[in-house]
Each structure stands twice: as C-alpha cells, then as structure tokens.
Image 1 (cartoon, one colour):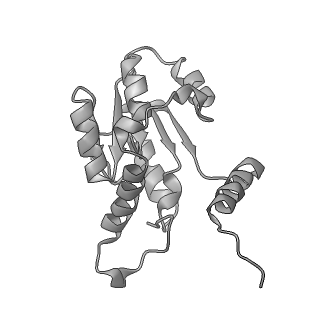
Image 2 (spheres, helix red, strand yellow):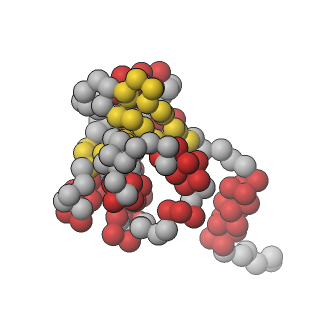
Image 3 (cartoon, rainbow, N blue to C red):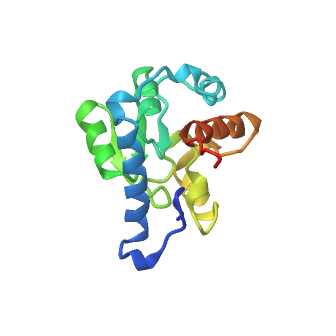
Length: 183
C-alpha cells in the first residue's frame, strides 16, 4: 500500500497499514474531523453518477462505502433508506463516526480483506481508495466482487489530474509561497 505523501519505508519501524492509517487519520483531523465535514454532498463530482445508480435500487438495498473517510456518503445513503456500511483504516476516525452516529455501521478495515460474507452488498462504491495498493487493483477488486451480490455493482473513482485539478493545485501552491526579494 502506498501513502499519498511518500513511499512506504519499512525502516520507519511502523507496519505498512499503520503508516497508511496514520496518514489518513492526520488528514481527517486536519480537515476538522467527521463532525466538521458534512458539507452538501450533492455538490460533489461523484454525486450525480452514484445517485443515478442508487435510485435504480429498491429501498433497503445494502451499500458499502469502501474507504469511507469522514462518513458523509455512508450517513447520507443510510438516512435515505439504503443501509450503508462505511469501512476505513483510520481507527480514530471510525471511533469518532461511531460516537456521532451510533445507529450507522462503521468498521475499521483493510478493504482487501473486509471479512464480510460472500454476496452481501447490492452496490459497492469507493472514492479514491482502490489505487492505494502497491500490488495493484487485483486483491481489492477480487474482494469487491466476492462481497457483491450477483448483479451487484461496483463504482470507483481514482485521482485524475485534469486541468481543473491542476489549476486548483497550482493556485494553492502559489498562495503558500512567500515572495522573495531581489537583491
């Protein structure tokens, strides 16, 4: 598994999964934690695609949010009548979500080995998580298809550096650069 901030280095003296969990825990805490991050998901890029698929499912269909982060999608669809399980590797984030939403299921989990029974979910969605595995998509996709019901759907996204993302990143870097004086 790789981290977004740098390659995994075994000489750090920390387990690979623990290193990934620490990276994401720090990211979620910096963003204010789950309670600070429930902006309107209907404005997110993925919403139109996912909502169109969910609307085709009968109410009560089971959904899985693999790499749920701060849980907004899990909470949203569960409250709409689609019991959704949120999986994430960050123990503090999942603990916070369980405290905030005791009626919604959040589990600490490596999505390559969910522990879920075969044929459990009607829809599995995951935003920007499947690409984090050094060995490639194979193990995580195999697990996804194992736990999906026959005819179930898998919807994932992976980062794509398009013009909009590149421009936003450039502007963010420019704001953080202090001007230097010519001598």
